[in-house]
Image 1 (cartoon, helix red, strand yellow):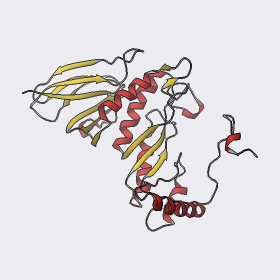
Image 2: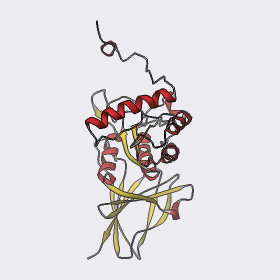
Image 3: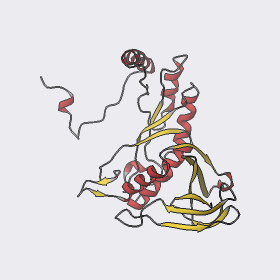
Image 4: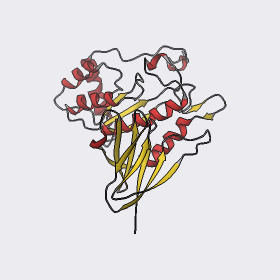
Length: 277
């Protein structure tokens, strides 16, 4: 008799959990007890919460006094180009209500083609996919996400690599650069002076030094303040590659009295400070 799993094909329908909130919590209690008995250090996550169905998870969490979950887990469905910042804030509120203050997005993706799942605001090309990946990661981290897992490495529309010839898309190099710049950050804050509904600036603390991520809805020149008047220069790296080989544009700016003028666009850039001796 063949197993059910071995009979699955790429055309098999997706099947999600069908039980009630009470059924789910009973399952969690049993499995959590077994897991912790074998490996006490294990981190328990809820099944990936998707879309806007928050009432189910609110009811699940309300069934117990203390949450059995160490980490709140949600999946992002790409219905908006700026990729999940509101969803992050929403799920953060739901889980933190039960003192679950760690939040992981274990399924995140951005399409590079017009796709039914992207809704009215889609990413129509690979350049849009790349820049929106940066915006989504940065906003989600700023809203409380601890970890974000990009779900499709090799896929024609939402992947980082096109399976046709194994071509690395701009998104591949973009995510690799983002990881290099801010992966080990210890804190992230917004720059209030630029939260004017059209300009976005976030400050990541990385190895004891600030790394800023900045963009605007439309191109403009801004005067960007740095952390200290002792800063003498700024290194600005565009977040998406300038060509198909993964080369990035990097520019040096002189800094006077702790600030400098910078042209920003809808493509995010990284700003790193250089201090004099």
